[in-house]
Each structure stands twice: as structure tokens, then as C-alpha cells.
Image (cartoon, rainbow, N blue to C red):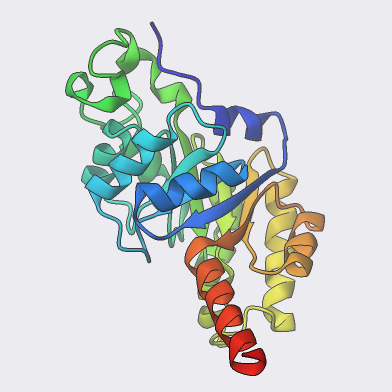
Length: 257
């Protein structure tokens, strides 16, 4: 029995546009609510949300068999951390702040079993192999891993051509906020200079064999990104959605109540 199909990766390879949302509550119940909404993919965020291995694992377990497909973002690209979330059942990863082809190649190796990589082969006690029920997991797992590298600095933009040439990188996710900061536009990813760089990057990725991804929190910006070539779009953040709805409700009652 082989490793299960990575439906997120398969959809990207078919060229489908996928609409997603950030899951930042670090709780499976909140992520279940997002899954019920019908998003194509959900980012279980370990970089800026208070997720750890156990909360990531719990959310991955809850999403098994659901239409919303999990993508785990780690705070860094350390091989030991990658190994742990892959064993917990993640098949798709986003790794932030990738700035060179060498860094991308190291990440590919961290996600693959030998001889293509350095991933440790202890999957028998892990969800990834359904606790040893998937007898051919190790020889078939590499093909089902989806690695998304996040480019969010001018160093990464300058190296984009080389990063796109790395075998095993399936997509490039542009990080508008950190890119804006790196360009000197702190808190303003809508600055024309930043948008010009984003547009050029998305178009370059879209014309390569890799998939282009990005996050936008308003519809018009997301539509621009889609027009520029973004294939997998995150169009909301659960924490922000709740905060906005709560504040709007309070504001309405302060005026009308």
C-alpha cells in the first residue's frame, strides 16, 4: 500500500486555482470551523501563530478526509522540525524566508527519504504511515511531498530564477508584508513599488513549472494577484476575521444601542 495521494499537490499540478485561509487559533475546533466553510486549503501556521507540534498534529488529525487540505507553515526550515511535522501527517509545507537556491535544495533534502534526502525513516510509529498500516509508505512518500518556499525579501526576489530551477520545489509563495518591510515600506505592502515587485514575481513564477501563491486580505487585492498569476490564494486569516466581526458588532451597538 503506497503513501496517500497529496491532493493539494495534485491540484496544483493540474493547474487548478485553490482558495485558502490562514488558521491561526492553534486549535482544532477553530480549524474545523474553517474546514466547514469549504476552503480548498488551510495554512496551519507555526510561524506567527502559537502552534506547536501537538497543536499542529491535532489539526492535521481533524482534517483527515476533509475537503479542506492542510498546509503546515513552520517558523524555520530546520530538518528536525520538518521531520516531525511530516511524521505527524503533513504532506504540504510552507517554509518562510527562502533567499537562495542552496537553501531551497537543503529544504528539498529535508523533506525526502534517502537517497534523495535525509529524512529519518521512523515512520512506523507515526500518523504519516497510519501507524505502520501503510506498508509501502517510505518508498512512496517522496513523490507525495509538496514543498512551498516563501520568498519575502529582495534577496529572495533576486534569487527567484535560481530557486525556480530547484527540482523538488513545487511552488513559491510571495510574502507581501515582509517584502514591503525589506523594501523600506514598513506596514505598506500596497506601495506601488512593492506591488510592482510582487507583480513581476508572480508572473515569473506563473510562467515556470512551479505554482505561484500569495496572501491577500481584501478582495480587490486578491483579484489583482490572481490576474498576475497567483494559483493558490489565501484570502483570509481566521484571527483577523473574528477580530473584525467582533469589533464591528461592538461598534454597531455603541452607536445604535
